[in-house]
Image (cartoon, rainbow, N blue to C red; front, side, top):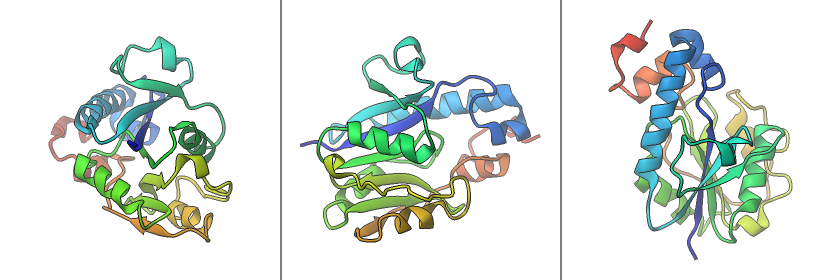
Length: 202
């Protein structure tokens, strides 16, 4: 059976996406960047080896928004912490391997995603570390067996997020793949996506 790749994505509206980046380049520029970054990512990640699913926020965007391709399945993220929402999306996937990623990492490639799924043979969980101590990908070998403790006690948006998440499943074998840059600031953007116009660098 095919694995499932879930992309956590917000409807791109000024002031609602990439708020830390917006402090550097403005809300409209941050919205523009996120809109085009997420669109490029979705085009790049279409692959017959996995099912591509969108986990969208706000919930109403699952049916009302025209931002994303109409052929992709959309699921509302629902409420709670980031961990609550990711676990909910994992459990909603078809049985089999499931990985969750964010939409704001320019370096994500199809080969990296496939490495993550392949790691979920020997490993129970897989992570794609981010350089800031967080992670851009988390995966579980079977969506029907997401650990109840997964994401418990995670200090989100800190350098401890990856270590905390691994600690939340101490009895599971874990693997790690490529380390990438998570874009939160204009400095991150310059490192992760040098093709962006210098006009963004205020």
